[in-house]
Image 1 (cartoon, rainbow, N blue to C red):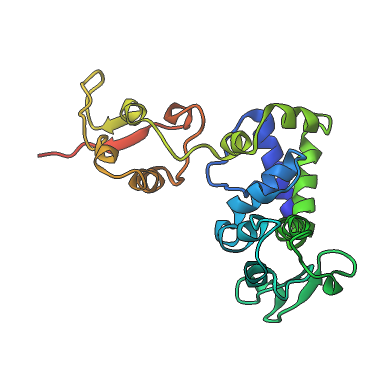
Image 2: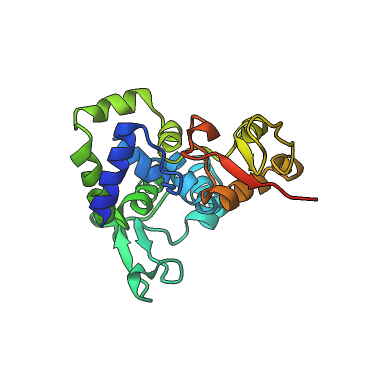
Length: 239
């Protein structure tokens, strides 16, 4: 199934189509562009973990006091323990994995804390879903020529690739009104202003939800609403 999903992504990229219902994580997009996984992509995946655990460890000064170092590093080794409450992959069991060979015996210190943060962030982004990711990427490159991989990475960022695949969440109100058509009026009749102006009354978070209600997806293709196969239709409301 995942290889088939990868083929669909490849076809969409090849033909310039937008998969408006699809949203992909930063680590997956980086893998697609053959870019390294780092703390910035981990921050997009789990900002709370980076904010509350990884970044404070990374920002500890080398000459930090013993009490400060103990607060963040005491008992830490180069291992990761899975949380069965946050992932169903471990069937309710708490399991420990070594981030490198002999990691259980290697303590995290001020000298090696950067290596620990790097290995831990890579583990969360790669190991847990590695088999699924490999299968999906294999499907993408069954459709796209493999020689295209370095070219994609040289001209696209992960944010730009996400826009190409999934579209964007924001849209122009002028574009909305321009491509809204009211049913029940004779040809050439002037189109009324509302309820095509309804998104203007709502906050920014309201607009994607309203767009999803109307079109079935909360994203807009890069070309705007005119790219949609059918116009946004509203029936005429009789007085």
